[in-house]
Length: 189
Image (cartoon, rainbow, N blue to C red):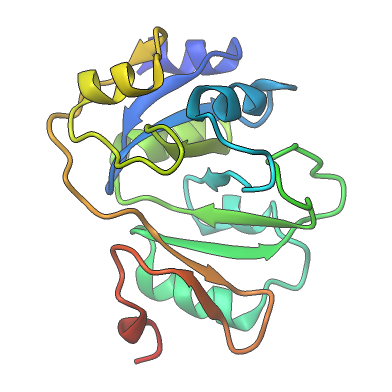
């Protein structure tokens, strides 16, 4: 844990397991660190990168007040878990995550190590450990090879989950942008 946290604080990219798939993570507190994720994935900057958080309090610290009621309700029901909520971005939180910049996708994963890293280092910009448009490999070694990652790798064993479901909470009612591990039908129930 200490070595992984140190690598993140130093601006390194860490490949780590989540509750869904392997991800590439950087500390949002390190200027320019997020740019490495776009390069490793071969992804255009118009597709924003989500942020993993330790808990709802950390998530809402990145959100413009007031946090939409739909986001609060969904987080209370599904976090920790595989649900990314897109909310308006707090004024002054100017981390370049790609995309237009007025919003941030936040997720509190159901993975103790990742939440502890977020407590220790702060929010982590994270994207799946695969080349853009390709499937995410199930093992840490395969994921590292797929993106050419030579930094710190945390092996959590095989992961064969679906990516998180992404919900835009900047509109009412919230709208599913990408269906993943949480079925869209379960979100409106």
